[in-house]
Length: 68
Length: 428
Image 1 (spheres, each protein chain N blue to C red):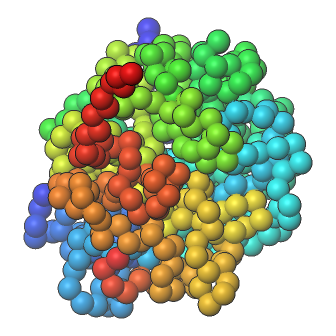
Image 2: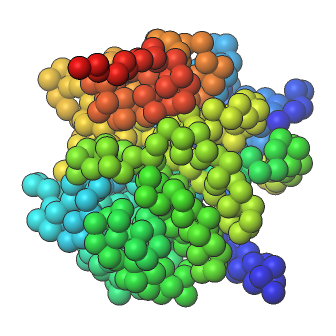
């Protein structure tokens, strides 16, 4: 999650959540700790940087005001 | 041998994902105040990036309007739309589980949406930028149009995922399993424990469903509602998942909702079990080499072990993100902050339907207490994990204390903070 000049990855939410009652999050990385994630994150970053720039897809959503 | 099987599974999984993504291209990007969210198919992930990273990797053109003003941190503001929506397609189910959080019945709920209405809801969610839907019930597998709805979601760039009991509608579901991103079967215990948790012996049927689904699809997992009755069996459940070559075990905390409100005192885990939860599941995941997921309500039990806060943030481990990262919808389309929650307070006298998400999302007071978690009382206010945990599960808080915004009463920190009541023996 480093690299100030070229920006940084803030978080990665792994996998899908099939559970229709709550938000599931993969905690398998807690087994191996921050070091393993620090090794994987640059690979994900490279996947995003090295391919053709993705178009920004439009939405009807608007950000909410305030800091809630 | 197991390693070779896993490698083969991985290769086939990737090939299948790429093939489906070519046929139905999922939404790949969404701008946010902090930067953007980018969806990857291989590996499967939602990646949150800051503005500089987004400028370097996306075709953003001129400075987007959403980036006006100072760049906030992830979590400082509500997202521009949910990441995922949990759609309770029906409340019909014949299983009659004693802890069912929706109180499902063979008759279902009055005025349930049909295919046309749910397809319209999917359209509105896609327009808003939602990435995934999790379809559930009741038992959604009995719906004759489930495959059609999943196809519609795919066409609109939303990846549909599914939870099923495996007890009904299986023949139809096996035929449409490839349309879903991930399917999990609810399995709350092995053999007799299944019956102790659910109130009837459905293990053999659920196991048969898991084997049939796994024969046609690799991304099959199990959802396990953790109760005091199956806690001691978690290692065995992970062993079962490994034996069936399932892709994940997702662990869910028991919620006092629907019929679960009546069964709560009998089924909820003890405080000691909550404190032992994280080391127990990580040991089981390591021993059996199975991926483990936990639901949002378990964040207080993770924080209890003081894990690296930055690591939790980087893994997007959050507590209650109802009305922010996720929303729910009841069978009649009523919008909720999460599937366990009652519909939110009316705005201008109107309770919103899921089709009206975009308008309601920015309304003042939308989702009530689910968005006011920053105004926390102790011991949440001084907890270093509070901006991630957000006070724990509001559904549990509401049931136990009567207040949605009270600290989660099952959080070990909250338990330790509560005034000790020393009961003196009664001397006659």
